[in-house]
Length: 74
Image (cartoon, rainbow, N blue to C red; front, side, top):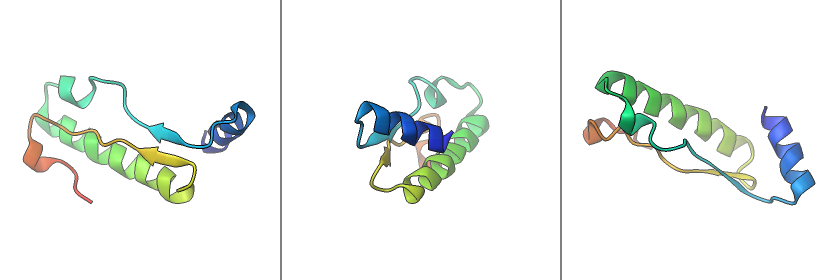
């Protein structure tokens, strides 16, 4: 998927893409623990992509607002 995305970006002349969840995702989850776990998984996933191609990808944070203190930290 990562390679395909870069190929499509190149074809369309897109230099940088911002990775993000559609809203609402974490905020719409009823189970606080699942929301926190999903936020952590997103941070790991997007972090790997940005580290692999830092000049091509950036990422928005997604925070589990059910428990802001549990938000993934850097």
